Image (cartoon, rainbow, N blue to C red; front, top):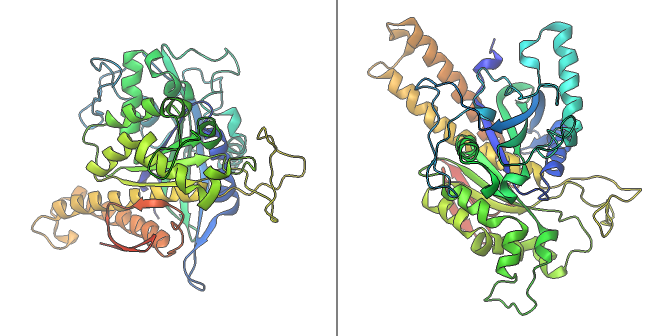
Amino acid sequence: MKHESDLCEFYISLVGGSASGKTSFISGVVQLLVSQGLSVGKAGDEKYIYFRPVAVGSGEIDARPEPVKTAAQAIPQISSPFMSQSAGGGGGAFSAVGGAPSPLKDKAQVPSLNVTDKEGADRLGTAQQVERLIRQWQILSAENAGTKRAGFHAPTDKVSFAEMTFEVIINDVPRAKLRITDYGGEFIDDPDGTVQNVYSKLINHIYNSDGAIILANVRAMEEHIDDTFDANSSMFRAVGVNRSISADSINSLFRSMGEKKDFTIVAALTQTDNPFIDKRLSENNFRRPLTELKKNILRPTFQCAAMRKWSSGLLPVTAVGTKRDGSANVDKLNNLIEDAVISPHGIDTAVLFCLYNGALARKKELSRERDSLCGMFARPKLFADKAEREKFSELCSQIDDLSAIADALHSDPQLFEEVFEGECALEKTTVVGDVKVRKQR
């Protein structure tokens, strides 16, 4: 029987300022992929996918020295774009071993729970606690991680994070783990206020993830529309709109990631459910502001994606949605109305797009490792060493899991239809009109 520790683990970082909608985005993940699940594929041959919560925690990345790591644990050092040199190290959100949540600086802040080290009734009880906390994500958001006891900490010596881990279940079979980490928006809002050591560590965390979802609040962008724009000029006043979503900080962050390979970037436009959004933004499913994000506002980030052959895409998302008749769930101030019917949209697409491309990348990596292990031997039973046979078996099992994830998501041609200018770097691509039809290698 496959052990949970044998599952591949994927990491997605949420990147956005304090008002970008990260907390609402997480609530949409819970609604769409935990509560409801998703059926993909042709009728009669559907694959049912859902996320089972297994761990939750929060904490702070601070400037304290960390123990020296072995070569196998070492994290590449990335220079901060805001400092002259990098003095940071690894650790924090992605340094925990064995799939356990990262240790908290103050464990009394928020419970750090993990079902994988529990058995029997303890496991069931912990699983219920984990799901309850995830459903109350606002308690665990990076912005709120330190507020319950000591108040919010200034970003001068630490950055808060919150994270949750799921098992990715396909047709009732666990195939991988997915960890989503939300970093405090104050880091993006004011990166110059973060000390050198902390900034470097935080960049390393994101560097070691499989993908990042950049959240941009369309209501904040709306305040900077230039009424004199035309088809050949930007619809926004550059300085104002860049500041509204902390674009300079985001662009610098991804520029700093060196020669990172096999990464996925998704820019998600949030608060698109508001009925009072300027029609010039919302028409054609927000095509114009999405284009602006790629061509102007986040241009350096998407240039990095193109040069480094990252997968990338853009799409509008909503954590609230509209009622069945199309009427609004929120008022002009974006507060829920009394008879709101919550129906998030697009959030699952953003997460699954990252997961799909991550599965293809990891499958390529593990296939090379398996082939290298085989060497001149065609079959694992010819391996002289028991450890080699076990490693070969483990790699084959993980590759099968990754294939199951990629095949399930690839089986629905409409799944990523709303991803604007989607690029899957590890697929062969044929362009048909506005829709890209892809065939896996």
